[in-house]
Amino acid sequence: MKSMSKALIPTEWGNFEMIAYGVQEGDPMPHLALIHERTAGRSNLLVRIHSECMTGDLFKSTRCECGGQLRKSLDLIAREGGILIYLRQEGRGIGLIEKLKAYQLQDQGLDTVEANVELGHAPDERSFDLGVKILADLGVKSIRLLTNNPDKIKAIEDSAITLLERVPIIIAPNQNNRGYMQTKKKILGHLLD
Image (cartoon, rainbow, N blue to C red; front, top):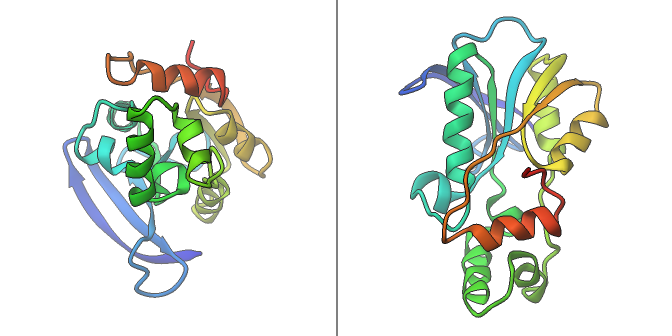
C-alpha cells in the first residue's frame, strides 16, 4: 500500500490535505488520510482511525454510532489539528452487501456478532494495521487516539508509534442502537463507560 494522490479538500471542519492510499495505481477503493490544516509536526497528534460505515457516515443511520463518532472526531480535530485515517473496510470488514444481510438477521433477533457469524464471517474482520502503516508513512511519532475500540489501541501499542493517550469518543445511544452498543461493550470489549 502506498500514497497514490493527494489534494486540498475544504470542508465545514476546515481545510484538509487528503491523501489516497492504494495497492495499485487507480485503486477504486483507496484508504484515506486527512491531515487538518492546523496540524503541526508529527508528535502528540490527535488521530482517529475510522472504518467506513456508509449507512452511518453518509446517510446518518441511527442503527450505529459510527457517523456520530466520525463527526465528533472531525469537530475535535478541527479545534487543534490532527489526522483522520478513513479505512475502506465497511461492515467490520465484510462489505456493504453482507452488512445489509447482517442487518436483516439483526431484525430477526440476532445481535451484530451473531449475525456476522451466521453469515460465515468472523465477528470483526477489520485490520487496523492498515491505519498504522499510513500513520508510519506520514512520519507520525506519537498520538492521542480517538477510540473506544481495544483492537485499535493494541494495533498502535504493537507498532513503533507511541500511544500517549486514549481519548474516548462516546456517542449517547438511541432507541435504534442501544442493543448494538451493549453488544459492542459486552462481547467486543469496547470501552463505552
